[in-house]
Image (cartoon, rainbow, N blue to C red):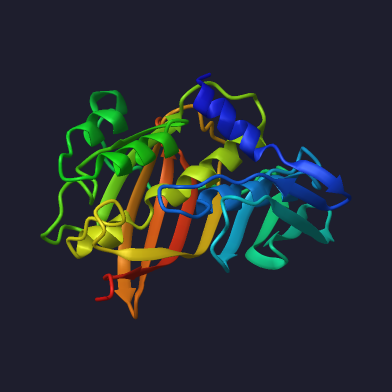
Length: 290
């Protein structure tokens, strides 16, 4: 396990300060605020700490309410909304400086047999044939070297490989609003189903709005031709998976309107099992003239 992954695991390992109350540390993202995936992952950890281990999450729904301060800890309060025979529901509010910055509802389920079908996995190249993030970013002379450094630092815990050029690598002309990314953690993880779901939740916020940018020929935050932030985020966890094994993140944008862009995606294991469905809407705007 590399040091970056260990640091991420430490970041996600919350301190319990009272029953149903947890505290997590913060760190800055590529932009000067707390990364949304970090808050979502920490909130899911807080919820999961109050649920029996034999009930992994099957869904989460979340709203990003305020910008997170990377210089201050985050307090997570858990509301035990329901404990049923098959399902358990939790609501988590993340608080900084006395104000809620994030709210999450998550549902957990005890395993049971049932009907089964899935959408087929789309074609995608073998991830080991694709450039690493470092290989791609080192070739982009149009991006500020400090931004490149921040990108690489933010993604050092994860091996994330684009199938095609990311929006910040090729922009100016609209492209199909579809993006594929392979990812896995840079090191093996413990055999804890909640941990793998939490890591996938963390990564899911990194690239989901890329397809919105592609549709409009925008490079995004890395090149400064877009401003924006995540508004809400939803995930459904269909089948067991490991976040330390390759996962295909197949993303598309069906709509953008009113300063908002919608991204939706499916995450598949390398052997073709549909593991997760993700939907997110975010603010996506052209920078305003000063």
